[in-house]
Image 1 (cartoon, rainbow over the protein chains, first blue to last red):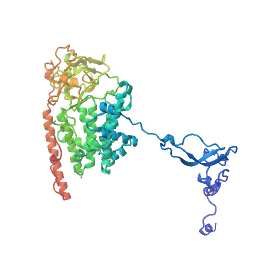
Image 2 (image 1 turned 180 degrees about the vertical axis):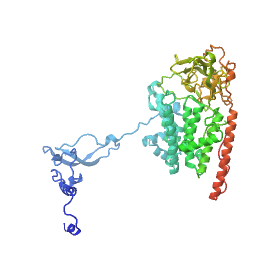
Image 3 (image 1 turned 60 degrees about the horizontal axis):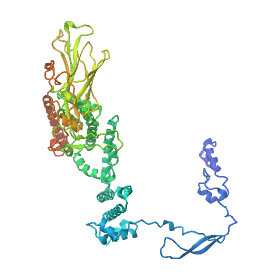
Length: 370
Length: 269
């Protein structure tokens, strides 16, 4: 107050500032009982909307009619094969220890690896690339390591790739399954029979994944560009096919493009897109080329069209980056040169030449601006 | 191919046409998947328009001209091989303004006094395309110049040239029209196997479908692409010369060496 006197600020203050002063005092005046002040403050000092903890339950005592002791008792684990006896603390209620198996025994799952006899091997499983010895070793490792093929591949005596091992394992399992089945139809629903392991596809898939993983930032950006371009093309296709019969599921084809496809696409597109970037006018020319490409694509989607329509679309695409005044100047230039704005004889050749002429006039006008 | 309207991308220009078989979903209602030829286009050059004769002494208030609206092949060949029927939509003041012509030559004659826009819908045979293509033409009765007494012998002719393009033609269609003079068909690589053509049931009630000996054929306009091509080519040369000159000037201003000839950087195939 004294400071205000000195400064000469009027003593009467605005009502808003006074409000602010009184409000902080309304902080949690009452904290609920049952939990300590510090714990309550952890929630931010405000009561939760829905009390998640029934506060009165927090200091509940156990039912007093039960007598609980803790005892150091031996136990067995059915998951073990060696009858090892260990000890642990057990909560004993009224002198009765808990019954039942060790609670973690149920988590000891293992894979059912097929076991074949020697005659079955002779009959169904021989393979030029694999000796019986190797196959037996493989299966033993599979059982031991629960089909963890990375580990198996590491431990396998002769060097085989993970895909080869998987191929042999699944091939043998499949053959045994079919051989042992009473009739082919019984097992035709089994996933092994329906979708057999495809080595080449797996190798390809992993190679593609590793390529994606090891992509440089540059490549990543290029891929994003290509995908955006593809999306634009499909969008324009979808637009032009809005009223048409759904004959070709092109959208789904593009939609199912997985990462490896995009990588392959990126590889093939980037060299050609490098050719298309000549010199100073990089940005406009790439966008014009992109527009022309998407226009061509959407034209191809039509079942039938007129040559003049195609020319109009291509002209529009080529002048997409130009303003209205520039377009007027192009038309003026055409007139001065004695060329019809719309060709009188729109054959394929004439339309192509006309389009090129328009593009050249655009280039000329751009140059003249500089 | 010459004169492809395509961006500068050499890769696709030399691709041979290939078959594209669309994926037919399992539960589709369509029993047959149509095989189409990708990167192949079938082109049908047409001319459409009107021809109007003044009736002279026989003219009345409401009927001063006798005019014909028609669609013909640009070389006067029979376009009935591709077009099944044509529907001309006239001004509502006409009786039954929707006129259907079921067979070539696709034309319609009427009498009247007024100029209006005629909508022409081309319907194609079932193996060609199941969607119609629409054209529009303004009926012209009165000549540009007021050349004194109107002649009953010389008609006022207004024709437009255009080309119908089928970008991915069905195999059957291609095989059927392969050698027809009305249709422009590219050559397929050697050894390409096409199905045996199935002839369409075509109705030629008026005898022949071509317009080579049409009674009005000597009034037909001539459309020669050579003149237009020449005009455009010379225009392009002029523009290119300008560009080179400007580029040189700009680079001199910026102190750079003269740029290479633009022709070397682009593909004008």
